[in-house]
Image (cartoon, rainbow, N blue to C red; front, top):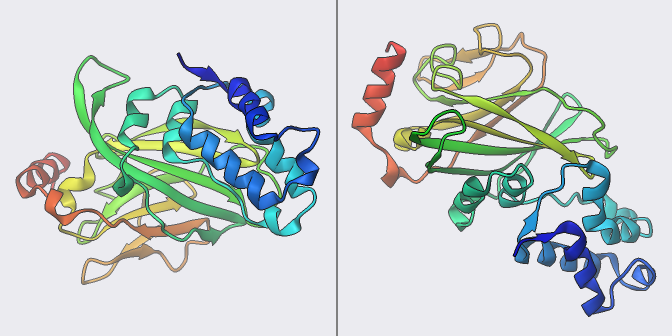
Length: 264
């Protein structure tokens, strides 16, 4: 039976960790215990930000005693994010180590933007009864000055492929959808999905985070060699990650079919 977040917090009693004596335990130990409980337990998501914060109240209390502990933000895992949004099938896609990447976050426009994970697979679509092959991106957005995020940033995320104009091949032209996420402990989490981009794994694939909607020439530029970057005149939020896809998963035939559908 799935446990609630309150049940998970209660299990700290077994390790003599509770709100009464948390001040006697080092911040590092509290953080380790909390990470362990989040990864080991299967929990039922609670949508209230106030109630969900109970899960790591011990970490918050410990951080009050340690500026160093506060400076290092602990992010939920992609699986945690999917479960919190009640996307249980999607959560199962994020169980493999190769779906979680240790890519350094990027800072822009006052935000700290981190790519938590990428997974591709076939799960039941939210919009039909047809199983579709999709790629899912989990993004965490925090304030670079360390203050908690209080409202949604409304930043857009889009994959691009080297050699193909970003205003033609982007999240909108490959059946992309932004899933409204949630704000938890001062960090905004969002899931984006689109057609499976692993079919382009033999090429350089980017993931851009930016202000606005559909990518345009005023926001992005493509060099003669196909490299994609932000337009020099664009001044909004800009983060560009290169996605380390498994080249063995490239599918040239499927890629050509998708490109033909888009109009290349």
